[in-house]
Structure formats: C-alpha cells, structure tokens
Amino acid sequence: MGLLNIFGFGSKGESAKEFMAKGAVIIDVRTYEEFASSHIKGSKNIPLQVINNKVADIKKLNKPVIVCCRSGMRSAQAASLLKAQGVEVMNGGGWERLERDLG
Image (cartoon, rainbow, N blue to C red):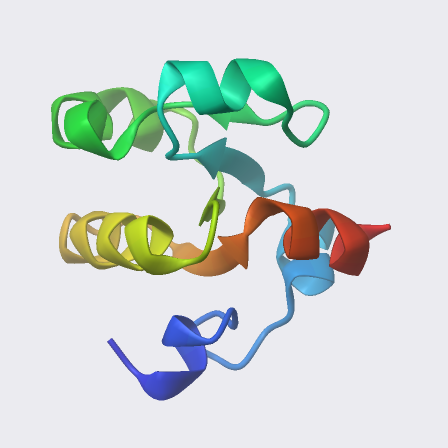
C-alpha cells in the first residue's frame, strides 16, 4: 500500500470527494456498537473482524469503496485486504474527519 493510500487517498492520489463522484460506497469497519453510536449517513457497517468473509458481497456492489474507522488504523488494514482482493478502495481514515471532508 502506498503512502497516499495510508493517508486517505486512492491509489491514483484521488480524494474522497473524487471517489464519491465515481459512486463509491463508504464502509465503516468499526464494531457494531461503535457504528450504532454514530456514523456517516448512508455508510455500511462491516466490522474489520468479519470483512474478509464479506469480500464477495463487496465485489458484487461493483463500486469503488472508501473504508473508515475511528482513527484510520483498522481502515488501513481493511483497505489493504480489499485491495489485495481486487477491490478499488481507499482508506478514508477516521470517520469523523471523512465526514467533514465530504461535507
């Protein structure tokens, strides 16, 4: 994973807004409890612990993916896993910052 992707950019240096313009889906990889407390409207919750089992479902969406979490650590792991499976993905980092960036 390149440095741009670690810090919240797509593999081509695209911003989250550019990813969203391509129809991206936001996947929040925090726990169900964390997601229930607050999240980005319209995002999907697939915790990091189970995302490996959901790769086929994510691929069926046929859309780019932005992953987020609380701080960016879990989303970096999820982005790496999804990228290795051929998903167009970017690490959106912490969900609150991502929400501000998209606003």
